[in-house]
Amino acid sequence: MYKILRKEDLNQTTTLMEIIAPRVAAKAKIGQFVILRVNEEGERIPLTIAAWDKKTGSVTVIFQKVGKTTMLLGEKKQGEYISDFAGPLGKPTEMEGYKRVIVVGGGLGCAIAYPTAKAFFDMGVEVDLIAGFKNKDIVILEDEMKAACTRLHLMTDDGSYGKKGFTTTEL
Image 1 (cartoon, helix red, strand yellow):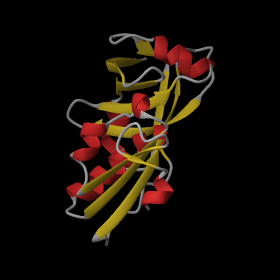
Image 2 (image 1 turned 120 degrees about the vertical axis):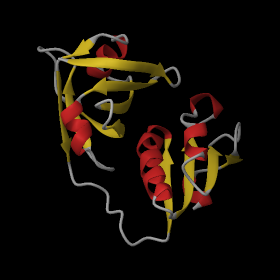
Image 3 (image 1 turned 90 degrees about the horizontal axis):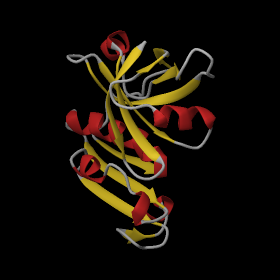
Image 4 (image 1 turned 120 degrees about the horizontal axis):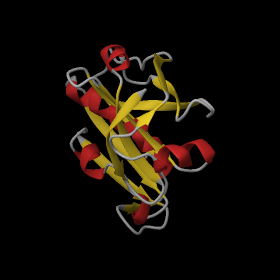
């Protein structure tokens, strides 16, 4: 069983959860994911690792409540437990040898773009982060992204926040 250390709703459909999983936190790298099950009867789902803390042994995931399993996960409260949490899985993002990068994320994809940009930025790489959303109401991680890049280019499809247009327009 894996304890939910922190739960934060980022908007109406998107939730951040920090889960105690020391073995995963000890080996996690940018670009990897976990497979989790909310309960013993539930299906296994993959979620990208958004952050980890080796000291506390926690791993952060960000997910959108769109299906049965993510709805069940979203109902869990801070202090409760989930059944399984396996990882880290997948090939980590290649990080060496770059001087300048552009990281692009749209909507929930910003949950993946943010830690990637932060890792590069923390290594001294010049980072342009282009983050796109449908409208102002679903913008997530804005402050975190601002602190994780040289330049943040915030886009909304309808122009309600940031610059009007798609991420590809800014790219």
